[in-house]
Length: 194
Image (tube, rainbow, N blue to C red; front, side, top):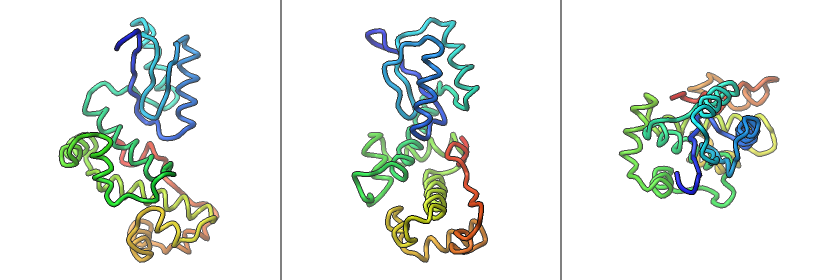
């Protein structure tokens, strides 16, 4: 908190529409919103009474406040991985998502992974693989990119690696999934909910 700014850390913000919903919710409560990004919002310092209203309103629209530093760290990791897989337009792929996380978090990967495991009961690696698989399912359902392009875009080692993922997770091959009338996907905020 400085110069009257107050940062609220928010769980389950996973897309640009989440930013719009949070901004609108805060404005409806009379907050002066300075910025809203995935995972947090900056507002003018609210009175204590309005903080409870913010908490309640955000819960109504599917979000939650993050109080502990550990929970904030885990949410930052999730957001960085979502940005990498869903919104990355500057880097085609990174050599290692662990290096990517270390670069942006300025914390050793092992420490991040330990916190993540403690909060979510899964490793960052497990979360990343599930997130990447959901992104692959989404891209396949759009039918605008070849599977080979999807493999390259998401950093799978090979077509076979993605194909094996489909067999193990869905008990079907990629073509069978693509041919389905309804391609079920898990929403980003429900992937290993922690």
